[in-house]
Length: 562
Image 1 (cartoon, one colour):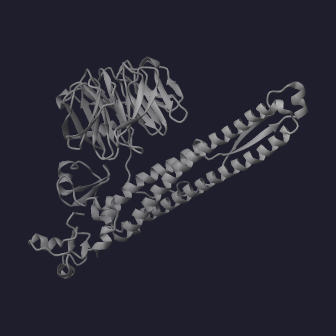
Image 2 (cartoon, rainbow, N blue to C red; image 1 turned 30 degrees about the vertical axis):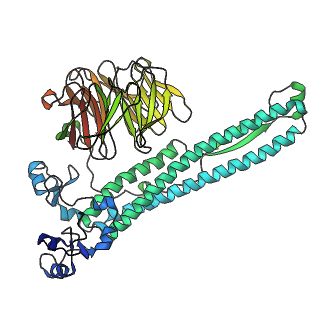
Image 3 (cartoon, helix red, strand yellow; image 1 turned 180 degrees about the horizontal axis):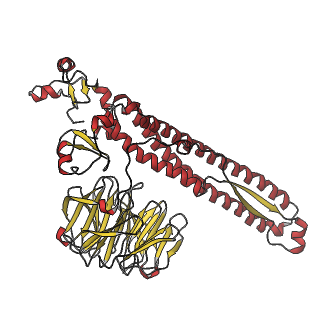
């Protein structure tokens, strides 16, 4: 919706300023009382859907921002391409989709969308997600209560046992009580973390439900259709979250008990403990409902995962970077870009169109960077001269934490509270921020300066022989592909929303795309496209953009066409 929604569009076109009282969903403009009457009487517009301006303004902002016209050509959407799963205007069809066979009129695709099975299914899935999250949260809270009751009961039994023992065993009792509290605290922390994740998911599901309800009442069919596509992604993430809770046994109930030792035997045999705290884990009582397991889910039009042969790039923008020796880059959620300059110890953050927003100075070499969207934190590795990770708050631009890893450190990615990093000769490591542990996942010599990519539950690592290895988050290798025939000096790596892998060749001045299973790869871009020592890549999952940064001067933003 335009910023002039409070003004009658027809009158404004005639240089007359009149307030609008209604909004036409098809015309996408406001109408005053007089124009409203003419609009309702005209043969061309009498069947248009009109809502009160106040009701239309009440739609969520992200729904109002969904333009109903092609942003490239400023023409109305008229066709839906099922092959590429996108709406198209008349000129888009001619320029980009002329060879596509599965094209449908947009009015046929969105017809009766609010009463469609897909929309009804979306409402049911959101409701189901909300109920499941509530049930798990309540179950976890009950588990905390039962742990407290277990602890209280055991504490009393320990006191009764202690009464049979003289003062010499006071210290042993104190140690056991400490162990008891430590076990409870550790389990409470684990369960509380799960509850926090669940509450966040509940909040997002509630927001989606609110959006869907308002869309159902006031949005146009096209807006509804686009909103459903957006919400479907959130639904999939939440469903995966629920499945991961079960798969990773995070909703197993835990209880505390203890093994009582005979007090007289303790005295006679000088046993150093008067009992053992036992932590028992069993499957949780919460039963999750899943429409996915009950019936085939009716969703929006889908297409098979495109192969690497389907990948086409369209240059959106060339950005002039600042400084030299740009090792790594990243996208911010709002489209801003971060570039780490190794030689100057700086990280430059550029706005969407390339102007400088601000510069970070961590005080040490800045090798690779990765942005944590949920907490607005930037991870920075230190490369050759230093041996730590810095965690910088982008909002106040201050370093909040420094993690010493004791080795040279380059590429880095994150998932949950774990940081996966390239330790060069020390291989692929993971740091757990919860307990500070540092574990080697894969014992392999990695290339200096090489990036790491993460997608879903897979890690993608560049080896020192211009190869890419895919492994799971526990370090189990899934596949490995050699790229030396098409690429030299592999440096940057990223993965798109389909699991296709993109790698930049620093020496060969090109970018190669690898299939999801590692069985195929091909050259996608070369020096003819302006690549000169490309060191880093980053994929924007929200906008389907690929960012490629040369070592100096230029970075390129490409739209990935499915």
